[in-house]
Structure formats: structure tokens, C-alpha cells
Image 1: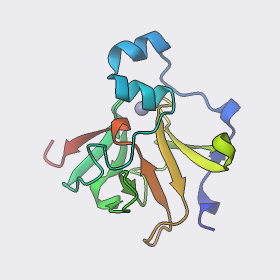
Image 2: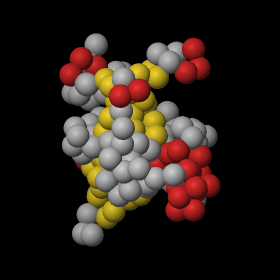
Image 3: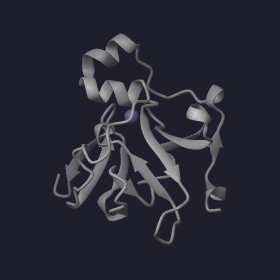
Amino acid sequence: MTYKHLKINKRDSFRPVLQKSDKEWELELSQDQYHILRNKGTERPFTGAFDAHFEPGKYVCAGCGTPLFYSGAKFNSHCGWPSFDAPATDENITYLKDTSHGMIRIEIVCSNCGGHLGHVFDDGPTDTGLRYCVNSASLLFKKEED
Ligand SMILES: [Zn+2]
């Protein structure tokens, strides 16, 4: 219902700006970050660092530092993962159709490095109607004064 303004990209035609080999990513990222960002893993609910984290600031991509979400867009979804109702900027997040696990979902990835963040759903409780459900391990937090 509220997906209509999102630009859903074809998986084959999306090419991240930042290109690195799996080996390079493996050296730079923690095991959890690598599993989620590069292998599209999912952290267990209620285990991530930012699920119940509500300080003012911004959340950037753990792979490349691109700003992805502001704390003002964060809400408690009670689903066990950090949830936001809007991205920091439209350009920084890319939407990809995901038909894995027998479902049709919209995967969200970092536009710059292609890192997997999570999925977006159209059952959000705020005006945007969207719920960006993100793995904590995909994100780093920058306090407002930074
Ligand atoms: Zn990134």
C-alpha cells in the first residue's frame, strides 16, 4: 500500500559504487558484520546493540560509513530489530526485490557498498507507513555531537 513511491531495483542491474573483494571485506569487518552485510544474514531478534537504543544521533553503514538513518526516525517496533520509518536520504538506500525463503519481500541495501541491511515492510505505525527493519550489526552509531 505504501510501497508505491519506493523505487524497487532489479537485483541484476544494481552495482554498488564501492567494489571490494570478499577477502577485503572479511579482513575489515567483524564476523557478525561480514555475515550480515556480505552474506545477507540476520541477527537473532532482541540481541542487537541498537534494538533498544534511543540516543540522538545518526546510524551509518558499518561497511562504508554512509549515513543511513537518523535517530528521529527510529521507533520501538517490538519486533526485536532496530526499526525506522524513513531513511536518512532516499539515495543512500537501494531497494531490491527479494524472493528468498518463499516470500516476496523488499530487501534494503546500502547504495554505496551494497551491504545488506534488512527489509522494509509497509506495516509501519507512523505517517510514512513504512518499517525499515535493520540488523544492528549493519549499523554504527554516531552521537549527535560528533
Ligand atoms: Zn555501505
